[in-house]
Image (cartoon, rainbow, N blue to C red; front, top):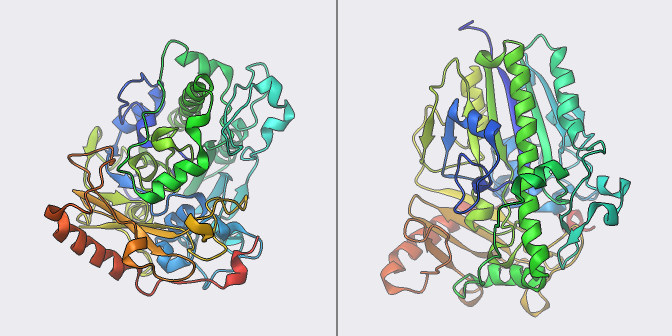
Length: 469
């Protein structure tokens, strides 16, 4: 058994913030995630893990390739446009696993540049990840709640109807039944991404709990975060409906927990649990109304911080909580190490069970071109003064988060447009207070700005025609 290659089961969610899980803790709600909590108890919970881009396509591309957006040229969801062309071919860790004797499969959402899609996994079935499944029953039946910008952030799916997203787990487990191993399978669960429409039985779990309304928008947020809130206009929602959307988000996570339970039960009943690496993660989080927003795109901890749980009973001691800073680039390197595969030289990040923690990690979002928009897939949301949406980059350490605009309309912004934000993440864990203009933090701002400039120097760019809808 000791020399047998482990199976890899990767459960990957969309827009799942870390504190939506009981094992991470929520300040006021009693969360219903017993299976995910059990998974955390069986291995390691990483409490200080962040995504490399707070948006779907760019984050997913980075985690698969072990490269930053500055290396791939994929900075936002324009990467999934039909016209988008990668500046250079990209190698993924699932493809490397297939070259080392693994069968690889993805069930559910893929959402990467079209040129990448055929070569990431040997088998792919997107059934269950469709965003328009709500149309089967219609808005009135589902009691749909839309935010001011039109996204479905709440509603209830009847228990007496087949729930389409269940198909991701159904199909994945069916595939696993016929494998002799070793294999790498990803359950890529669309939820709790919009449309947020949990089955009614999970909503009832929260019927006696009140998540409350989001607090007032902090005046110390960056201009970037204030503009995001302005576009989304969450505070103009009906308060009762806004509270319901928050309940429905956590109810949707309770449904995700049930899917994790099904996967773990399969592994246990088939005697596979000891020789299986289970990794649970998310592409980015969601503010769920906090900071006036109900979408990703910022570096606030509700979006930038994401869960990471790794269990491998054969090798990894249980019940560990680690607070060293890490990011999604580390997933590929870590899985290579656990499977005994030499990591290709192109992969950045670190093996979380071998390498020391870095001093800094980085994240970036946006193309920063005249055509860039807050919501590129829907083509709306300009920056101030009718300008294109900025590219914004972030550097984190154990103590600080600094982010700033690095490109607007294809040019590096002047000092007055950089909109530098610095948070002391220890003293201010919500990261609401901007210290960038405080004299006592001048050296910190200077040092982190320098590191960010070095990181973004020579960033890979794409042809302008790739960004056309």
